[in-house]
Image (cartoon, rainbow, N blue to C red; front, side, top):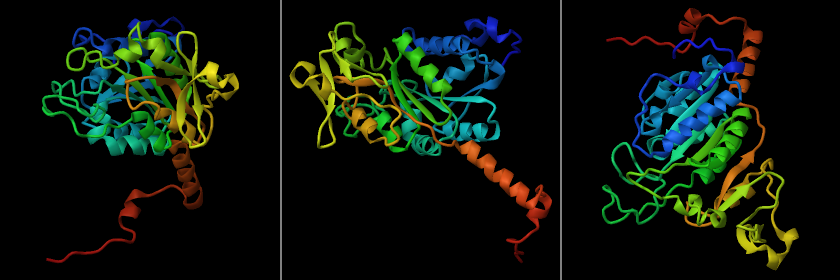
Length: 343
């Protein structure tokens, strides 16, 4: 990171940009996400010297090179593990993880879910383009069944992950979804994620215009987005459509279903509660669609408070030090649990 002495009140996006050439394919959604994140940091008065971006491997994982903050381009799937150590050792830092659907949900699956369940104080931005872009177009853990790629010439037979459902199942305290090209919505979600203390998952549907172009067209296209974007707002009825004529209800069987408001009445429409401690209704909403193939919720699914991993670890260390005094590593090495091995 280059030295940045500009006061936070006068910082601009340039203060978060490096001298590195941004090298993604022309038209890639990553450019828009990069701009959105940099503008968000300016708007919130972030300190580059207190901000860290950790990435794994993939197109999205070039992100730290383009951020004039501290950062690390780590190893495949392990960014959450490295970020966990950093967030635990340096709770004064804002730690962000940038990853992709292949990086996070394939080789990195365990690191991903355990960082979330532990409520480590870090923010995971998962760029989901439903394809392996860096390695030139193989199917990923979020590719739809039947997806024909270089690695699935007869069509994928895998059941894809739903990242929102996965995060909710891991008891993440903040779970949201946004769209790469919807910069106002992305800014809104980033502000909420940045203010949250604890584990954050923000899934960003990101178009790969080379290997999986228009994968999200139903949800992002001008002609169809009003019919397919279900925008979640805490405390508001879950309605959508050009005239808000459609709505979501929770049935007695525990399912979320789409209805016509005129047929069931306004009072029947579910009111979104992102702060509900029990994640079951948020999970039910996440199952309305297992991908961008019809009406799909975007926004904050869950936002609750829970003690963070680093807070609890610090409390345990403080209690142990109060009980036993300062530690002595040399003494620890030679106390108990040792044995001699003879030839």
